[in-house]
View 1 (spheres, each protein chain N blue to C red):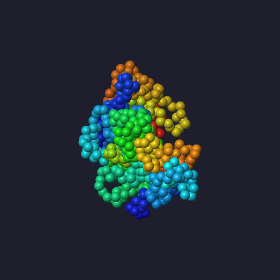
View 2 (tube, rainbow over the protein chains, first blue to last red; view 1 turned 90 degrees about the vertical axis):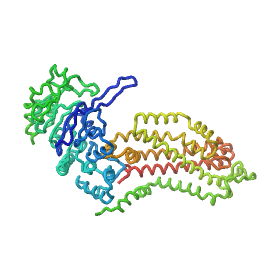
View 3 (tube, helix red, strand yellow; view 1 turned 120 degrees about the vertical axis):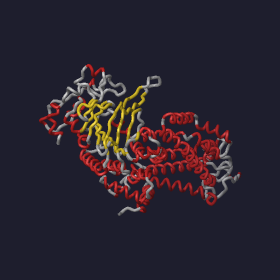
View 4 (cartoon, rainbow over the protein chains, first blue to last red; view 1 turned 90 degrees about the horizontal axis):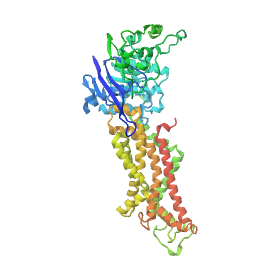
Length: 337
Length: 289
């Protein structure tokens, strides 16, 4: 059963240089469609500027989309009434990358977690505090942190508070926007495991945004790879990691550092240069200037996202002929751990 | 369990007070300000003479046991005038700041929060106002309203709320970019709640600093207007008016200007010390331990 269905979602940011300049658009999200089943995790992967954060904010309607449909539990999020929007807010949560910036420095933990309860229910203070403490314990904190200010907590603890805020109303969907990227490695693992634990306990559905493929692999059921506002590949974790079909995905995979000196000189799928400006994306396939496998067609025609194997969508003209297995063979043992 | 309602309440309310009491300069400012408040409130009892009691036989007398601050060009007791003048100075300073902040802060919040054309309109008005020399504009307003202390307060407030709008707007803009605002919207907070629960508390420190800076200048503006004949009418013992009257005798009888000047300085200082302390105490990030 699909909890979230996104159809042809677009978000263009207007951009105007100077008074008489022509209006330009940054196509942060440009025709993205996908769906997420209840209780599963969709990992959204891409480098910075690929539109993954904009996507996350748009599906929660924290940014208004330019066009497209977002169906949450069957109703279109883009045309909710005020009442329905409030209910939608109750059923969704978000966790950001920088936990300190995502907590109001003037509020104690108690008040941070109390606000959602005050907005969405009319229970008394006694039962609110009880619920807050229960949630704090669920995320690995305790009543002792209740009266603390965010700056009195460590980064990991702050992120636990942010997670508590996202789940305290028992939402159905949580968007996790690089929730571990700004934390120490040891804390990252704890937070990831906490997220997995909460997911299985509350049947949460996650949209997990990250630039880190290994993190995505650890938590996701499905992976969606984005490049310059477009989806280039979408499939199950196993498929994406064992049999990537898009050269960009393959290059991301082969750039994962592997702690094995014997693999130091291994063959990699290369990528050329920096990502181009999203203000002026390349014609044809957006990836073609950086793609070592580009042919003439790639410059002329934009590839569609097509289903090549079962549940394996790729947007590449050469998806049928290219295989990257040989490049990744060496990594298999490491990645399958 | 170790926590209960009372404990949470007392932690929330007492902490600010406890921290303030540990702040030495803040306490000094508070003591100084309390002293000013004390003489203002008890002026009727501690002033040896009435503030408008003229004595032609004792003009420009130096400080003595009879007139501890000396007398002015009309033979009035300067100490008595200063004690009564404290009422005017404090009242005017506070009133101006309250009115200014009351106009400027909401406008700044709205401009910064909504942005776009709302912001452009408010910023244009603010800039226009900023472009006028405040004293000239205040003069024009007082001319329309007529002389008197209340009208001076209105005039000074109207010409000088712009800094509040600017400071609050700028701070609001920077806060709006923080993720806790997006997070607040994600849990369903209304615009009003975001403005007052999330943005305003984070702009408090600059507002307090600004208020401490505007109280002295408010006192000075009203003084200037009094000197020009628009504000406090003689024989009202306005400190600034006394200072200005005294300047004609600065070499012959320096006490005529020294004491009003000293009290203006001390009052301004007390607000500044207090303001600094409040900023430190209200900003949880600056707290130690």
